[in-house]
Length: 325
Image (cartoon, rainbow, N blue to C red; front, side, top):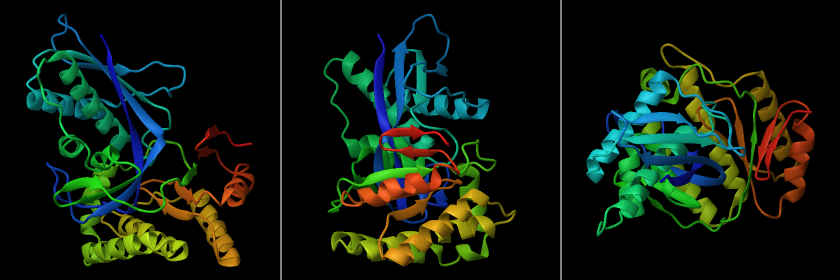
């Protein structure tokens, strides 16, 4: 019998970039994120006594996007599942299927949601098929998931998550019902993976002081958001994602995720903010695409951005995918 679990992607407002321990995915600095409940990965697992080893195939479902993992990606996914089986003392071999309801490998944190969902599915199978086993707590599962994908540990807590040296945990912020959009400036697979980016940024001259800058911004952002100071929160988020992308642009060898669509959209969004004195929080992951977060009272801004940018690029909204027109 199949056991299925799903987990959300997440978008960090204070970024995780650079590792102190690559094997354990220990971050160089704390990070702070919002779980994106509408952007989800679905994983299902089924024990199969006829298999000689665990296998992965794409999950075929009408509401999910087609996915094909590279051989490297598949090996990483199955390696984490083997680690989970050892942790949970599971001996069976499994069929594993997964897919997202959003584009993969283009900077929307599909790795985070995928490894979180895989960890949840393995744990759910354990509880359903092993009498008397105690369920793991979310913080414990998050630490297990972190071994496969660092940022996946943040996907166990909603809406807000704080990831620090001791692991990820929920954090209370007054903004609990933000609307989310993504301007899909480029949906193609990234030429430089997030894993590779974590290595390269360490070669940038700008990495000196990065940890201190990120930790200081973290405290300022939490304080601003708890005070419901939206403008200051916007300014901190804006500076933070530019700081991260500057590391990419100055690493050895240097690389860029931002493209012409990204830069044009960022300029227009910033101009709108300066003219109105209000607008969405703006941030980016390690990719070309732009994440926008809106308060519930910003419906006019939310739909204005769709009207302004949909002729230029597709947009992901809380209501689903909007194709370019």
